[in-house]
Length: 403
Ligand code: CTP
Image (tube, protein in one colour):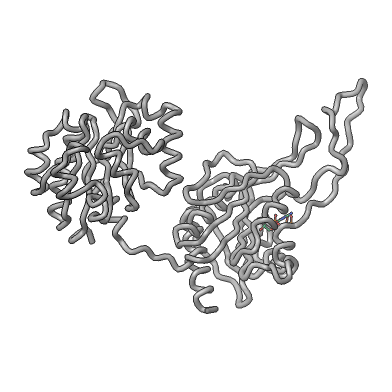
């Protein structure tokens, strides 16, 4: 798949630059056409001569070389490539890219290009961890720039940690992946996923919660995204980081979750994987509830929270085309789930046994039954990621049949 592609390789300053020579060799072996730009500091680590010997092409170093500008301007350099790879990408170069600086040939090309870019960062672990680099990285990721690595390991500077450039084979795999046609049957469709627990406040310092980790909902959001859907993830409080390419809306209580879901409509697919608290206290205290003297213990009274799944399933014209719920049960799993599907008005329900011995809550695996209008499909025990993938494929198949 790499064969016949034109890669513009930017080599910035760093000891890892020597690995880029091997990357060029592998790209050429795979049939790619490679042209390289060396930054001034990149040229301190590898010479233009050795790079040219491997690419078989002229290597570009200076910005204002008049001959280069007439023969092949910096705009042309990027226009003639299918992908720009920066390996190694130094902390300084990432900062320049994030801030749109253009003071040499390489950074000017990055600012002038409309081509996709893949970075292979390489730097000292402290530089990588520094908030400045992490902010630059977040900016670049948000712009859709691809990142491969860095890896963990011992570094030329004698330290150990994240910052080693990925191996040429890993960078090559990322380039191959870029050129592999993607299977995106859900592209053009909007999906709404709820995940995690909700917290229902008793007073300003206490709340009622449950053991949901949010892992299943996050995995579903990611799996739908990888099939091309445009995903909004409405998440209760979890320890999980926002998945890439997904719009995460963070909420705390069931009522907040419902209004975030309603704001995300219309959607083609809604999957309610959140463990929403069924009740909240009837009257939330504005002040911390104090221990009174003597033996008195407070008595809490509850009111029901809105049912998000049932509300989405009964939205009238705004109802998502496919509404999927979960049924967390500790007994009579299948029959309880079947009646829950009817009661809530959803199309599919995924039933799972959440008795403590199954370790579903907080764990990495799930044993699910998918119940639809035709009956029950029992899935074997699998990881939450695998279950998310299976569900997303099933959704793609169902929606394909409907078109
Ligand atoms: N759900 C919801 N809003 C609620 C309660 C549940 O959206 N207030 C959704 C969950 O996200 C899940 C499904 O409804 O998709 C079923 O959740 P579950 O906790 O199994 O059911 P409950 O409605 O709480 O019923 P019960 O506690 O009686 O089993």
